[in-house]
Amino acid sequence: MHRARQRRPRLTSTYVRAWSVLNGFALAAAMLGSANAQQPVSEASVASTTSTGSAASAATATPALPTSAATSAAGPALSANATAEPPKTPASQVGKLSLDRQVRWLSRAALSGTLAKMSDTALVALFQSLDPLALPRYLKEGPNGYPSYEFTMLRRERIEGKWPDQPDHMLVRVTRDPMRVYAKWLPDGDHSGQEILYDETTRPDEMLGHLGGILNVMTLWTALDGSLARSQSRHSIRDLGTEFITQQFLAEGKKFAEAGVTRANNIEVKTIDGARVVAFTYEAPQGQPQFYAKKEVLGLDLRRPYFRTAESFDNDGNIFESIVFQNIAPKVFDENTFNPKNPDYHF
Image (tube, rainbow, N blue to C red; front, side, top):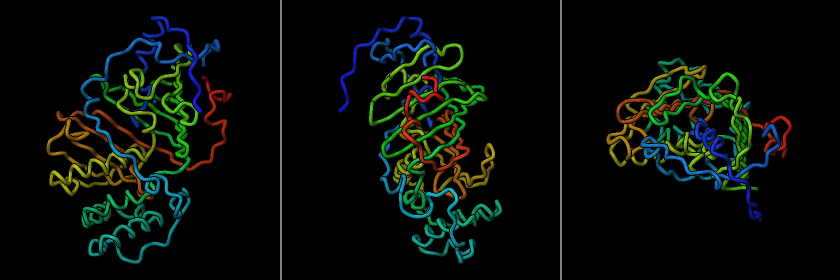
């Protein structure tokens, strides 16, 4: 049972100002120790900050994916080293297959390495020939991630009209059942040294975090959807991972279909920060706020049913979010991984 929280000391105005400049404290993506062993404090004792502005209003609530789609325990795709026999049907003939057979072909082609070996021209021709429902079905059937995994990512968000000069470079460890997240901002990216920790088994509505650099003076408990968590991101820490982009794509896809848009406006092959992907560009007819973004460019991984990259643009054509998943690997973590007393962490 969740224990009643003890009253904690109120922060000074200096600390309130320090936390107001915390960029990326909760992901956006995408995408969010005290040196003096100070007692962590609750956000309830911090003065309210202003909202994130008009960009945040573009965010739309999306339903959670079924467990079978998000982190299915069935099938070999959960293993990073899993393989399959290459499909026998030539890629040039896949568009003539039934929808079910197209989806099965994609799964086998990805796992066997067939997609990764295809030329840019052949990949574009393949996805242009598929049934419009093939890609959503392929992604929905998943798995779109792993029950327990570690990844690095590059992330940027436009907050209050400002696009960061360099991306956040983050190391993230995630388990899905129960939901636990640890994230650290790496030295070669923005906001180096920040850390956050979330464990739904102990505090389902709060996360623990601290600033990096010279402001690494305290640890703070803050509400997942509180003013501090939202002050620098439109996303929750629970959105971290490859599953969220798929979840949003499927939810937005329903609205696109209702608006008469069933195919991507453009399909091309790109290499983004070392990741070779098939990039699908979707342009919403009405734009924001009816849709999450006026235009989105989503990069499909060539070996697994999830997106490796995502770029979102507002109604004026300005990019407001960019996510690139780099190294993604399933891992089994021990309890110390999500323990704030882990000696490798600085809570």
